[in-house]
Image 1: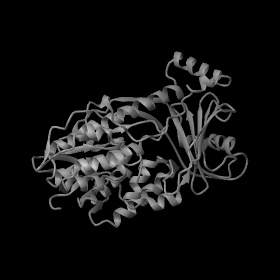
Image 2 (image 1 turned 90 degrees about the vertical axis):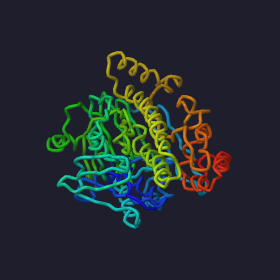
Image 3 (image 1 turned 180 degrees about the vertical axis):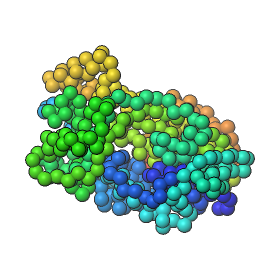
Image 4 (image 1 turned 45 degrees about the horizontal axis):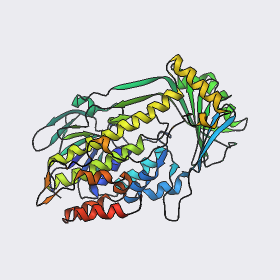
Length: 453
């Protein structure tokens, strides 16, 4: 497939997923990253959902992730020392991917980078800091610090929360940041918890008045998240010995090794626009959610897949440019739903008004005796693939464009598809589409069990 490559700003999990997705359609990409080289930096986004794993398996980089990851069997929620409820994840059937696994982002990125290095269509450029962007009717020109220019057909900003591309495009990023910080430590230790359980605590003895989360990870590591005051400094916690006290309250008095430490604010934001001409935003550059529910990286993978097949079709001349408008319509709607879910979680976990605090305290105390009140305890609704319905404004309305010589599948048919079905098999779906048998492709997917490979 000729023509200039698609430029991707950011060599994190979303940028690399998009590059590998486009490579499946023989679309060349140049991935630009400001860092001088890949970095190995702690856990960050650790929970991978089944639909993201399915994408990684399809892109031939999922095997090392699955081999390394910890499969989650259940999630427990406590008020102080009392367990309120336990969510059991059904055991996967033979050949089925786990519903959720824990894997440090370091390993996710390493597997994606290894596959990108084996893929001729993907070119990685490190130490490539973007300083300017120009667009015209034929493509885009990205200017790098130092003056080098890179020409492409389209550009996608996958460069995270502080996205340079988003700033260059002048796109607003409205939302809010939470006042409390979260202190996060990856600790190697022998812990008194099962290796397949996530544990969330409201007002635990180890962190009175706030929350604490304990996640198992590979390499005998545990991730501990403490909700802390907004002025908490991670390095000062370490220097003062307060971090050691915090860790020992959780792991006991045995030996432990600190593998990674950070403290940061959580944000709830969605970009005003996801498309500006030939430029697009994806992943954290387009949306930020609190991590309770694992809706950041998993949602970003859906962004990459959704945009990838659209760019491939339009770039090949097999679809009108207006097909690309569907990316923002679908994925921004999904981001707003994730924002709604995670905002409700944070409102319960870190109430911002006296009224919310009183209500949260009453629910938690009452939940010790009432199963009904336990239903209102919100410790994070774990990620699910986006499902589009009437509220998206697309049911029953065909997209206003045509593929040369054959109509585009009406969006009401697309809207009926569970996202996981399309995510798992977009290459098969598009292949049938290009062969002129799009309606049969949709019918086949609709007949398949949800999540079928």
